[in-house]
Length: 227
Ligand SMILES: CC(C)(COP(=O)(O)OP(=O)(O)OC[C@H]1O[C@@H](n2cnc3c(N)ncnc32)[C@H](O)[C@@H]1OP(=O)(O)O)[C@@H](O)C(=O)NCCC(=O)NCCS
Image (cartoon, rainbow, N blue to C red; front, side):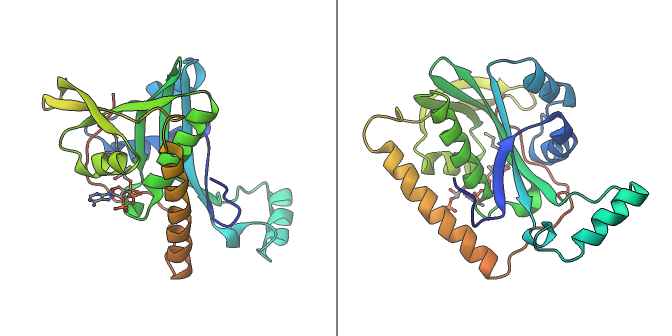
């Protein structure tokens, strides 16, 4: 999704993102991955593609912020570190298995859920998977995770199987959900329509005063639904 007029964007995950990712992970999943898993995915797993969803406050950018010149001068002389203007709001990853993108994880910071950002992230992941040659996307989701199931259903995922007792914390089943083949029928036209609607929604939210806070999420627990 072009981000020319939105302060949100998706970029590849870096090792330096892992602390922010882990902070979200612990509020999003009851079986959180350890830091080492993300480190492995980024540095060792050639099939893996991981991304972070970021927010950059337009007022903090150097062109728009009149204080930034003096901040730069101060940093030069004091070597003080600036608070980062980029904030990680979510992350997702997939494994490219031949022509199938297997989405391994997807989460949004708890205090900014329900504003279309999970959709924004999924949309970008699907676009990236297609760009890398995927024909379909698939994933596992907990049967009880109605929010995620609803998001996936909106993006054309349909139940294609079930793994009984897949999650070892409560023996819950996983649903396998899979998209139609990207190039068949009007699947991508549907994605294009969602993209346009989402852009309008995010723009409208920002215009009506919705702002993203800089700090992390406020505790609480959901559940990790992917492997
Ligand atoms: C699942 C998750 C990523 C969704 O992100 P989000 O930013 O809250 O979702 P969005 O605001 O983008 O909503 C997108 C869609 O999700 C569904 N959804 C979002 N909130 C919902 C709610 N409270 N109840 C039901 N469906 C909901 C809807 O289908 C919604 O589309 P709509 O706005 O047209 O109704 C987020 O809730 C999360 O991080 N959950 C914890 C981790 C997790 O379960 N990940 C999934 C792993 S398989």
